[in-house]
Image 1: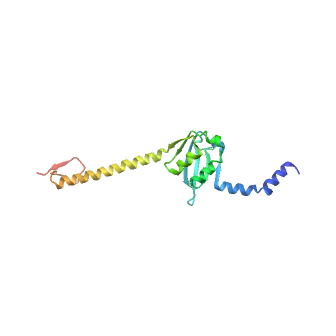
Image 2: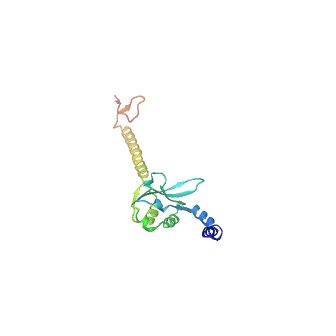
Image 3: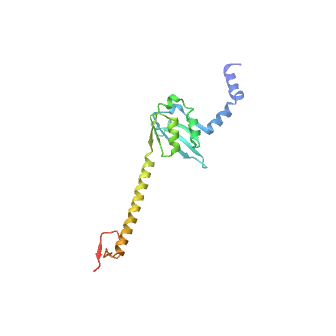
Length: 176
């Protein structure tokens, strides 16, 4: 029996390589050769409500060599365990990791890539700012309406809007 045949027999029949490889790949997939200095981490729902945590290399620009890890689920312990299977020396070389504002993603990034600077994803920051500005705008609008009604009821304002005008336009006529 030659060495090639022996290796084939061991791989296919003795070690159960095919079965454990398939079980492993349903939980996570790691590509250590794709690790780089700048990474992104995010969760996504692929199909039928299955959540996955995906780590990508920004240098790949979405092409081949971008995917670093794809891990089933978003539980921090499970994701950290999977990412810690990547060599520590390579994980320590990560300088920056972009993530959303989720505390789970923050914990994963801090534990798996301890030297990396954490950067909040621009989309999430912009959404927070837009929500805050919108809340302020609504609050000020209600304050102005309340103030206007109070001044009208107290007789301090003796003007009324022209027909068809909004009370917020500057074209008012005096009551005389």
